[in-house]
Length: 420
Ligand SMILES: Nc1nc2c(c(=O)[nH]1)N[C@H]1C(S)=C(S)[C@@H](COP(=O)(O)OP(=O)(O)OC[C@H]3O[C@@H](n4cnc5c(N)ncnc54)[C@H](O)[C@@H]3O)O[C@H]1N2
Ligand code: MOO
Ligand SMILES: [Mg+2]
Image (cartoon, rainbow, N blue to C red; front, side, top):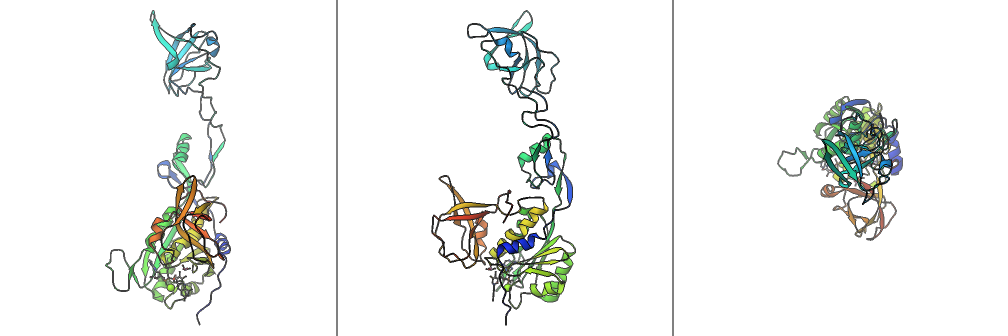
């Protein structure tokens, strides 16, 4: 008699895996090389921004009080006492009736409390001296960017765990971080199992298919922030599979296998876990696809036994492996971001188990819509290429009509969420 496995609820399965999550070891990488990583330490302002009071325009810095009498018919004249560009520190105090010719980004000279743009000033020379005249009044503080007006020293600007995007990088550079503290990328082993598998450079043969899962998983690992060691593909043969898997475990932080986790005569993973002495956390989850997803632990090391079916393999990774990798990188929001969307076509299948349907998002008329990315079958590979989300269709429902509100997990979003 074949073993009858009792499926556990998804949330329970997720929690069982997350019990083994931990924060990664730290390393420093150069600012140049920190793209796509996550901060392992917060960015704290090492100085105010801007660090000095400066001009937002090209113009003249002067005392606003001196413009009090200025009007269309009464231009007020100023003697121009200094000329400074950005990067030049003014040396002269601006006194009554004086102005400094100043460029965008230059430090405001002492005495001045506003900047008049070139466009409202008239510049001229008389007897070898520079003057300017203005025909309108200026307010105190007008066109001045005050020191610290953007950020005060010691402000916590970005939290640990934040994905380093170009804007975060700009901030790191602003504060002079030539090196950035990030979590070491977890080293994740990938092994494909199946006698039917061909290498990608092999011609098709009867009864065989090319191994696509290993490449898909490697890509998912990289997208999530991990580093891949690919140990190749294994024939469904116990002794050699056991040896390869056991040896691989010494070289990785965690190991992903694909295939061989169900109840088939050549599904060897259950026996391999057994012989390894690994504790199987679960081997059946109340979900589709990916119900056979198996997770085992051996000496604190996680072994993910993903399904051989491509769509099930993909979903198993995103639900169970990705959050572990995100957490290692200090993310406080390790789970896929879940949003509300409107279903844009009928989905007539009933759902005994919660279903994660490969989908793509459509942004129309101010609403987020969602459509099926292709055939909704566990063994399908084509729909994955179009998937930007996974619709979550709860178990116990009898299909959905176009227009129904639906939750969707976002696959390409860097900011996740706290809970699954
Ligand atoms: N009697 C039962 N049969 C099956 C059950 C069940 O509960 N009772 N579960 C089904 C479900 S659901 C799934 S999902 C699959 C899971 O199968 P395995 O994880 O054991 O995977 P395999 O048997 O090795 O392969 C399944 C399928 O996937 C193809 N495959 C495998 N590896 C790759 C790869 N690297 N790249 C591309 N495709 C791959 C393989 O050729 C098979 O077609 O079991 C059901 N059966
Ligand atoms: O695990 Mo299977 O993918 O449920 O279809
Ligand atoms: Mg099988």
